[in-house]
Length: 306
Image (cartoon, rainbow, N blue to C red; front, side):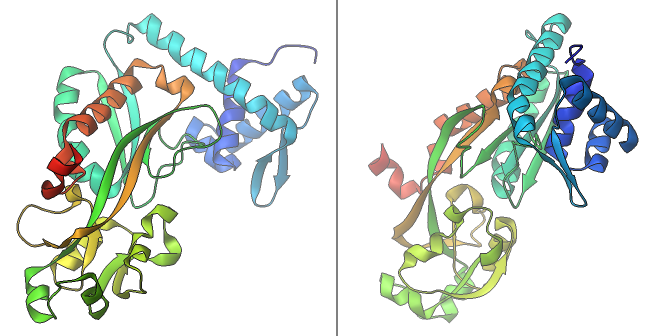
């Protein structure tokens, strides 16, 4: 290696590693794809090694590329932190935070809280990714995210956000037309609304398996929002956490003693977690989780869980 690589070349390396294609990296960087290719070629020449395997499907990191990745991420984190400090953003959060959230949790719980947060930080902007899947932090799709499966490898700050329960719910009209549910065994005679089974965002979403029998799934959807609407219209029973169920009487709890328990995790890349703008959003999520137990547990279980 005859000279040190430029930080801008390392940035091109990071974006190509995350996007996997020249076109994807060029969109992230707002440059032509030929510029990305030229910068990567120059970086490989400077380092005297091949960083990517090229194929018709895209670019995949080589062993040397994987070894360089954490160093490039550390450089990125240092550059972001320096920019924040010099701009005074370490005091007043400013800039854009991309927040990855489960669909219904994002819409029903987090979105209303952002009003106060943005009023307190006039120079802060939020891009909320409320998805039927979980945001991919490895390719920097989001700056921080709430998920069922925390990262097990890589440089991340991870914290358990909350433990919550999925309870059974049904529409009053559905329950009036179908056999009564007095015991767990009665559930086998009923229809269910669930996730599309071969498109689960996490194995943790296969909670209907805990019924102990194969449920008769009459309607399946990718997201919980669609499931709530389907169950509210009487298409079957569904399982959902308390925060997902509208407080309008369209769904009522069935067989309160049965539930499936899961945990949400909050995660952010280590270098981004240090940034003031990311930290204020992190703290907001921790605060709402710690101080609103009714979001996670059925009201009848709050006393027993205390």
